[in-house]
Image 1 (cartoon, rainbow, N blue to C red):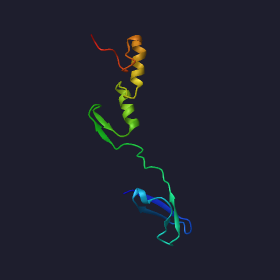
Image 2: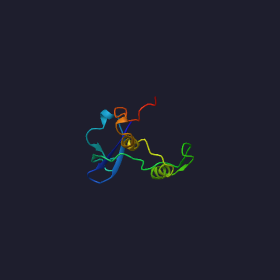
Image 3: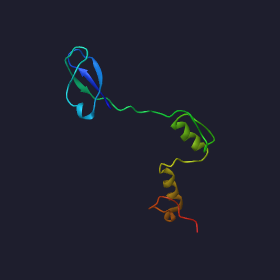
Length: 107
């Protein structure tokens, strides 16, 4: 069940309750003073970077996204984010398959 955060309007205590989705609406009693607490909305938890890992394709340890991008650039590689497709389109001109975003098949 999800956890919902509340803050007491009287004593200012913040508290969490584990409730069913159907039961979270409205004010809830403060466990400290018994007054009604209002729902507190918090931003979602976001992981800002990655843990170090060994990238077999690059043959080295990668410590962050920026580190991976720098290693790829030093090896003459591009990430599959569309930037490589734009470069291919510029190099191949009309031969580039715009619908499938890839170079033409070899004959």
